[in-house]
Image 1 (cartoon, rainbow, N blue to C red):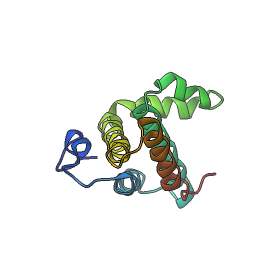
Image 2 (tube, helix red, strand yellow; image 1 turned 60 degrees about the horizontal axis):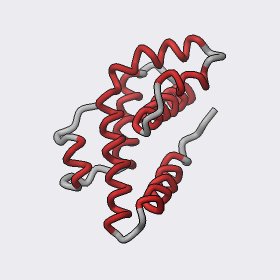
Image 3 (cartoon, rainbow, N blue to C red; image 1 turned 90 degrees about the vertical axis):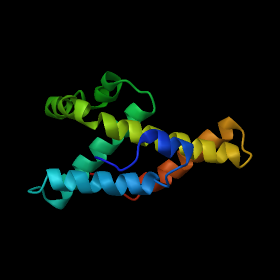
Image 4 (spheres, helix red, strand yellow; image 1 turned 135 degrees about the horizontal axis):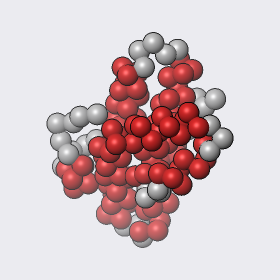
Length: 132
């Protein structure tokens, strides 16, 4: 995805771009790149790509993430192929998560509490997506 701002601006709070915006934009990007896919294929691809972005943005290693899909070599190959193309998405999602934590700290929470609150907000935002 491309933005008219950068991750640093998001971290600093100079741009109001949050998790909902990111998920909406990623969803649209997946839809455009999979124009012939049905809704279920699209939802699965979106969930897979988003989960990979989240894992990498939270410092998991690619091989660690792929181990979940070891039973499915085509999925692993697909994820390895797109990994270089989603580096910008990973960076932006990481910036959004950092901003969420910083918002909590600035509101008076401890860092641990702010991390937990950001995790809850992330879980709530990611939960509505249908998984199959």
